[in-house]
Image 1 (cartoon, one colour):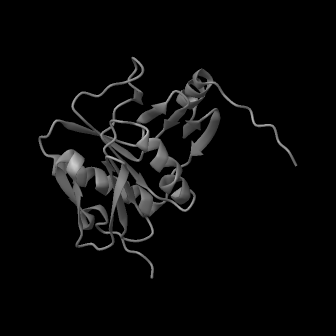
Image 2: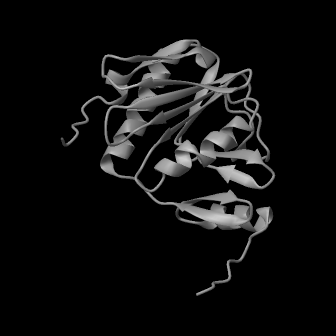
Image 3: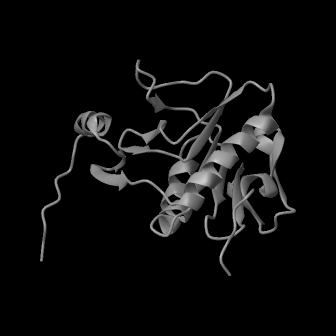
Length: 188
C-alpha cells in the first residue's frame, strides 16, 4: 500500500511545531514527533543537567533543556535532550527558539530512538561546526558514548561503569556517570 506523505516547508513546520503540544523534529520536509519519555529517560536527563551545571560552575556556558530547537541546516531541525552553549548563543530567530551554535549536545537513547541517535544524529551533529562533543547516554544500562570532534571526524570514548568519569574537553570539565545515573535501578 502506497501512502502519500506531505512534505512541509520550513515555515509550515515552524508554525505547526510552535502550535503543537509535543515537540516535532523536521528532517528534509518530514515531521518526526518526539513524544515524552520513560521514567529513566526523564531522570537521566534531569541528573545530566544538574551534573553539567555543577561541573561547569562559573564557566561562560549555558545549559538548555530539550525544549530548545537546534538548526542543523536549512532543512533539518532537532531537539537534543540537552545542549550547552559556551560564549554567546546565536539564534536564527528573534524569539530565540532556534539555536545555531551549541558546543555540546546530549541525547538519552530510547528503544525507538537508539538507531537514530547513533547514526542519523551523529551525522547531523557532525555537520554543525560549533558542536565539539556529542554525548549519548543509554537509559537501559549504565553506558555512555562520548564523541569528540577530531580533525578527521569524531573520536569515540565509551564508558560503562558508575566509577567512570567522562572528560568533556569542549567544556573543560568532567561528568561522573555516578551523578548521571544516580538513584536509577536497572533490571537484570
